[in-house]
Image (cartoon, rainbow over all chains, first blue to last red):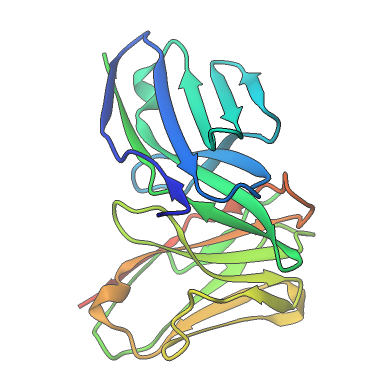
Amino acid sequence: QKEVEQNSGPLSVPEGAIASLNCTYSDRGSQSFFWYRQYSGKSPELIMFIYSNGDKEDGRFTAQLNKASQYVSLLIRDSQPSDSATYLCAVNKRSGGYQKVTFGTGTKLQVIP
Amino acid sequence: EAGVAQSPRYKIIEKRQSVAFWCNPISGHATLYWYQQILGQGPKLLIQFQNNGVVDDSQLPKDRFSAERLKGVDSTLKIQPAKLEDSAVYLCASSKGQGATDTQYFGPGTRLTVL
């Protein structure tokens, strides 16, 4: 079982719709969860992070965390073509005295005009 | 505030040659990471430094890869000898090194092609 799993996609949504990106993780000791966006040929950039159960909103983005189900998701409201990118889920846990971050393989999102 | 700097941006070498990548993290960031990202995959951690010391190099192919972080600032990643499967983007990232909500900032990456 992979530590962090994401559907590779592509996930296609029409412009203006809600895009829902999902991520599951295997280690119940995981503490915090990050969503990064990576445009083709570019490096990852942070969208937001979450560490408490429930929802966290930042503009058009909402992260949702359910630790009991070991599931974290990212919702993008009013999707725009400029949101077309690969979305990476990263999971942070304490390991041997330092913070260890593991990335998923990413989900490719395509927003169709 | 300047971001993470990396050089070179692109490198093409033949197999069995050696190559080195350089990274300058954001000023004051204690933690530095080197990742390998193969096309279509997520970043894979090669090595993580906390100040001068290595805290995780479990996925670093130590027979051919080496890395150092001098004086807790700049870092160099070397591959010697390179193999075809080393073709990838090598990403350097840095963070303040402050707990579970520590955010990583990535450099532009170095795209390595091994022929």
